[in-house]
Image (cartoon, rainbow, N blue to C red; front, side, top):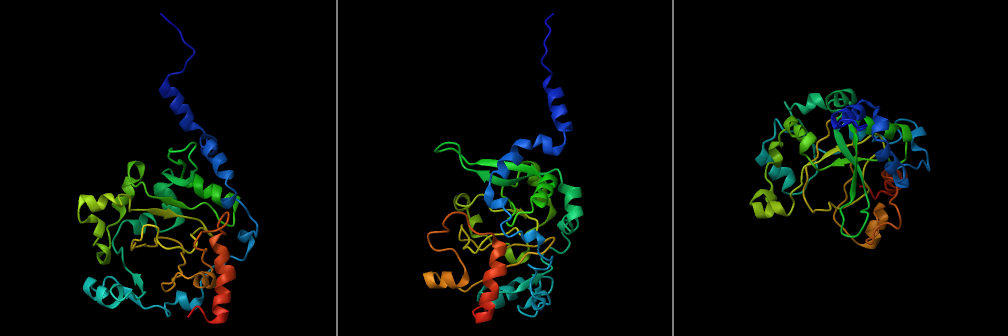
Amino acid sequence: MESSDDEPVDSVLAAHASKPLRERFAGSLEKLRNVRRHNHRDRALSDFPSRSLHPAEELLKGTVLPTISMTVVSKEEFAKQFSGPGRPSMIVGALEGSRCLETWQSRDAILENYGDMPFKVSEIAAPFPGAQPLKVELPLELYIEEAEKVAADFPFYIFEREMWGPREKLLEDFEVPKYFGDDLYDLTEYTRHFFPMYKFAVIGIERTGSNLHVDPSCTSAWNTLLSGLKRWVLFPPGDSDEYRASMGAPPKGGWEGDAPPPAYWWLDTLPKLRASGEDK
């Protein structure tokens, strides 16, 4: 009979699982803390009054854009009045009756249902040419805890596109709204191959978001807010250097160095546009 000091694999895994989250994901947290862009507090925005980044009251009242109910306006009428002519609108009732309105209705509900689910928080540059970027994942509970603790001006932003494995059950929480059931990429397997990963779960704390951009895949995506507050800004088409500069968009060659936190745009550029009348 042989003896060994090695522990059985199942015992090692059990011991690992029993450790506190921060200890189990210490390596991932260390990688994230080395990314200055999502850790700095150059302007300490988290110390600003809570409503500093909230929209104007007229936007919240729905008096700027037409508001339509998906339970009232038909798909054909929506296409005729809005999607066809490219007319912006606010849509309510898109996911009426969907389970996500319960499982995602609040911070507490999200954490209760999906707090232990892993999500991609960032990608680290590939270690050598030709390799894939290194994906850094955290359980949702730990992501929120860490992001709020760091209180960065531009916190890490979950933008998960691998909707399979442990995240596949998120797809059971909703159905595609009737206005957006048509998908050009779904015509054939060949066209689907050009854009295979097209479903995303996006989660962030205050001050998360993206800078001004054109959709990188040139798609017409639908986005539905399930909990919290998300601000959008839309501009008419245009691509001249002067137009980009006037709206605070990055130059055609991209930002030099790290892009500024998106919250800076709302605090610095939008007030100037409104004062000049260019936001009309």
